Image 1 (cartoon, one colour):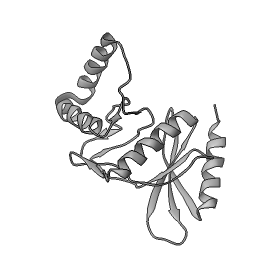
Image 2 (cartoon, rainbow, N blue to C red):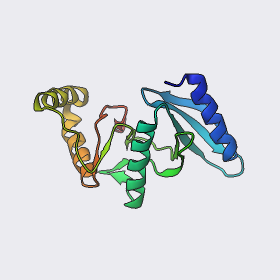
Image 3 (tube, rainbow, N blue to C red):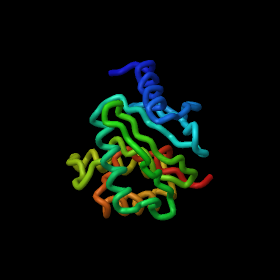
Image 4 (cartoon, rainbow, N blue to C red):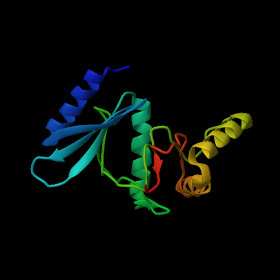
Length: 166
């Protein structure tokens, strides 16, 4: 597992390759870290996500490619970050920065087939999600169904990844 210093080194390498300047860290988690970045010659900011493992990188890259190929920029009024570039060597995904409401973080998503979890695990998962989202859970379920129509099965469902307007 790479250290945070190694992830930052890869972020710096990506930024140098693309004439970018790294900004603040937007977040970190199980799969990696995310920075704001800006191109030295073009206005605007983007997010770059540096993955810890190739598997999560490949999953997320492939989902973003699928959504880009299908011109999906929103799901039920929730913004979906647009894939701008990716780097298979550094395991970096560059994407738009989106505002609430949004759907993001596809590192644990599956393409074209749902993971095969036992029914008792799914029942427990649904109960946990109902509690997390409260009266917004039915809308989250509709978002998940919309993603499934594109062959995307989102597993990591939380208020951080499916964020409603404040």
